[in-house]
Amino acid sequence: MTYDVLVVGGGAAGLTAAAYAARAGRSVALFERQARLGGLVQSVNRDGFVFDMGLRAVESAGIVLPMLEELGLHLEYVRSPVSVGIEDRMIRVDSKASLADYRDLLVRTYPDRTADVDRIMALIERIMRDMDVLYGIDNPLFKDPMRDRRYLFGTLLPWMVRFVATIGRINRMSGPVEDLLDELTDDVGLKGIIGQHFFKGTPAFFAMSYFSVYLDYLYPRGGTAALMGLLEGFVRDHDVDVRTQQPILAVDPEARTVTDRDGAVHGYGTLVWCGDLKALYRAIDAEAIADPRLARAVVARRAELEACRGSDSVLSLFLSVDEPPATFAAVSEGHLFYAPDARGLGDLHTRGLEELLARHADGPLPEEPVKTYLDAFFARTTYEVSIPVLKDPTMAPPGKTGVIVSTLFDYRLTRRIHEAGWTAAFRDHAAEAMIAALEARLYPGLGAKVRSRFMTTPVTLESVTGNTDGAIIGWAFDGPRMPAIHQMQKVASSVRTPIAGVLQAGQWAYSPGGVPMAILTGKLAANRAVKGARR
Ligand SMILES: Cc1cc2nc3c(=O)[nH]c(=O)nc-3n(C[C@H](O)[C@H](O)[C@H](O)COP(=O)(O)OP(=O)(O)OC[C@H]3O[C@@H](n4cnc5c(N)ncnc54)[C@H](O)[C@@H]3O)c2cc1C
Image (cartoon, rainbow, N blue to C red; front, side, top):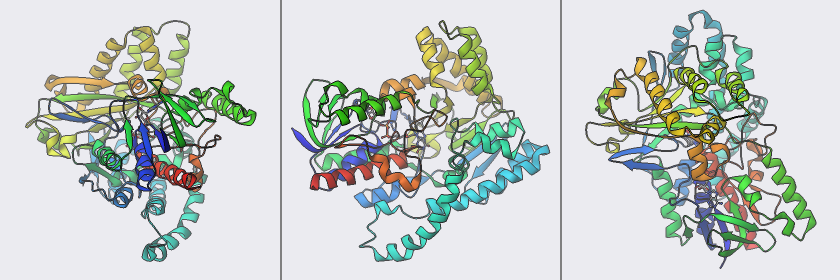
């Protein structure tokens, strides 16, 4: 069978692409290698505890809610306020005024650094004004300005003037956040507490805009995967041929066909690739391509991508706790960013980790030195803690609480541990160290109340989704070069590939990725595919 549009990958990007292509009346197939759709965005029920395996809350970013409205979908959600904590101090972030509390938190933690803190605050305040412009209106891609004159003249045109000024400032802040922090302070702890929350080399604007993102978080009733559930319902209702547990293993760009795991061949007018991008180029047999220009383009792009790494990944610990939600509600909101040690990581996770890996480059990674590293890392890293039952009371059995604790984590370290054969010991050690970091000041006695626990590592994420290096937002920022479009004004071209009839969307197409950008690029790809099919 030949489809007008064949989508590979059923995450946020693929579901969006399939939804919009089907809505435009095209014949659409969606192939997903896992048993469930949603990609990284999953919510699972373990004995009555619902855990969000991927993102802990959704930021609309002027994209998610307008997309749902355009598709006629209704998401039940609550606002999801955030707490920020350092050691035993905690603030609640629920409005722009909370920035004053954040300043106060930092000044109390670093009393000799008031001037540095004020410089940082002034910058965050300016960036929040830019964010008000960037995400301040419903994204025009999900509106119909030609029909909606009020939106066109009252909202879009005045906004475009402000957007042009803002985008210039954003582009000027595209250097790594670490360099920016070096300019603002020489206090290692203060730099760490602000910077270690982000992927290495994160563009400064993106990192420093997080205070605005906190105010935008919403939590879907039933878990973050409820968002994916709505999109899945839409594609199924619109006759998309959904094939789960069916990875696409080969692509023939000249015949415009793909081959699935069972060896079945499917034709396409346009292929929209929403999975790992290295996998696309590995799936093409360049030597079998007759057109030498196309063959050269495929080989060149493959070589370029093979030289690039995925972003930092994430390690998550899921705890079923025999303690009522009220105990946790007394400490923080249901979504918390927490640093247990004001000294921060310093260069432990950068230079320290590189030295550790280099020292043992020629043999299996031994347990003892790595455990020493892990103890220091888990005592000083920043945690994202999510407590779903504080956002939706149905998310845990009565009187009990599910707690999700995660931290950015290096893929190579988990891969090397896996290869050395002590993953189970690593998981136990990491879980104990993470619980100890939270017990010290945040939740005394937590460990004794944990009834069951499980963990996902960067290697888990890689094996489930096929994502290079277990990445969650696409390419590494500190790699040799960025092989994806990363400027907002060029986002429309991020879905193009050098191969006629093949488009890309999702976290590997635009950097930095994330759910809103996966949705945006998914729709851009669908629009292009629909136009192609019309021709
Ligand atoms: C713990 C965690 C926290 C996060 N926090 C946030 C956050 O706060 N905000 C935010 O915006 N984002 C966050 N993210 C990232 C966000 O979830 C992802 O960037 C986004 O979901 C990516 O969507 P995607 O469709 O591009 O890719 P994915 O979700 O990776 O989906 C790709 C899909 O393609 C499938 N696939 C791959 N290859 C093939 C093949 N050959 N054939 C068939 N199927 C294939 C995979 O199985 C997968 O289902 C977080 C992620 C995690 C894990």
